Image (cartoon, rainbow, N blue to C red):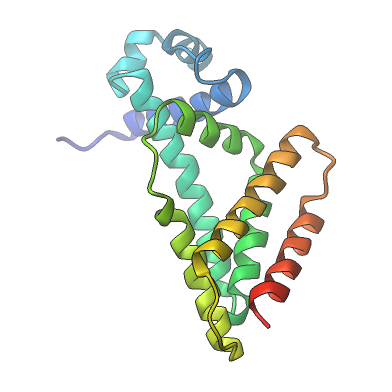
Length: 189
């Protein structure tokens, strides 16, 4: 496969950005290749030159959004001491998604309509590992159900983000702090 030119890469980036906006605003079913092309100011054939199908374009938009989220959260967690890893994870995840509500909708629409379901362990294992590291750094002993703890944390984040989508005035930073406090009391002392 040949390398894309600067212009081709710029057009692909534009199409991904337009797709994120349209899917977030109208949903996957109402976002057609024709609508994407019109919003980008090009023809449907030009869209198909860069992406072989609507699903391929939506998958690329999903990957773009997910990469941004993983990078932001990973940076925050890496900057935190191990004792603060779970808190950094929660606050950065909620903060990033609060700042990018269209990305949240893009993720949801892609997961429902296009992207194959990921294994549950792919999400909860990373959170459980952060809990293990924080417990070790704090000297916390004793058994705990790391899988359930990680699932509860993920569910808490999902609920906070979902509430912020229905009520933009909802204080997600305060909600993240409450979740962090619950994590501390339940699994880190």
